[in-house]
Length: 68
Image (cartoon, rainbow, N blue to C red):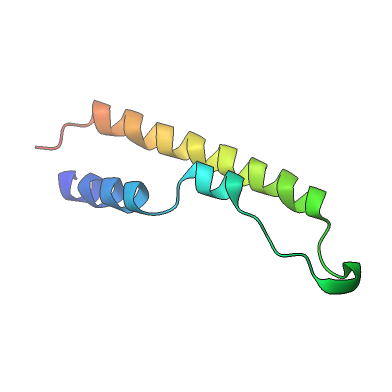
């Protein structure tokens, strides 16, 4: 199980972070065609918060389960 947690540890620390999601900006299309920026922002915040909770849960599980 230690190998799995080591892989997960590398994966989320080297890649996407909740702050990356929160700070993501999208280009606006011409003539107002596209997504509602406020709706996109609200969704990104929701996704980032859920992702952060998962990362915190993973860290807690890593503390509980010894890596052998």
